[in-house]
Image (cartoon, rainbow, N blue to C red):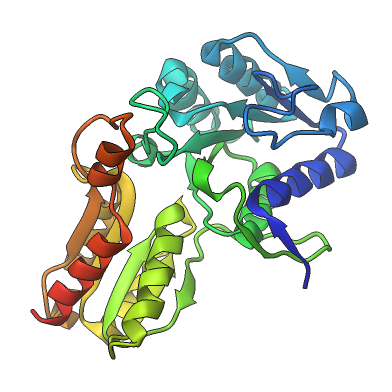
Length: 325
């Protein structure tokens, strides 16, 4: 199977959606001729024109508000919010409007809105451009949250998001754009609410998201040489959240480590840990352990950025502490 980048996989999904459905259109800051801040939409403006690939003012409120209205009117807008740090600027449109409209109108109105956004640190972009704030939106009923880690997942999950009749926030980690992986040339989709076991193991269950999946897999391969077998699970979607796959793994290993780039307090790992403690407590041989970004704004200095964000050595130490509990 051919290998393409994470960026190319997303672009392919957008291209296929634009080609197959005239109701699909893109809107966002500099996504037209420039191709977006990370060149994900490069070439689509030339192919589909300004009516289907629309540059917008620098206003998250305007982008999401207009897209929500367009979705309610029967179109399928895909917006790009350049950084997830700026999603709160459109908080009312996302949380109080898009997420609630279908419920408040008794199902008579659909809101097929996809919000693409970039999360994560790693490029010394400082506190306003480096957050992982997905947990803010896990708390909002009516929103679906997608957070892929591989090119294959990126394309398949985005295709599903675009076809969904509910608002979806689709998080793309900036450090994954150049990563490569196998992606079929044919069109395909991946159902929401189905976690993926990226690597099977028997000693520790490691649940990770976004770039932390890649770091965790690297650590798991290294620990195999030391006789420690780690099972790596990628939830892929945070809402809906596939807990059954996680429970089955916990029953097998008895030990759990959750790794994510969101801050520790009230991060996605808190919800996952709570559910494991409620539903799979009898299978645990050690307390559920969380490894996350420290509860501070993301520093710009590379050495400080690396210090506050989980690194491979941190993951390795956490796994060994569980193994020896």
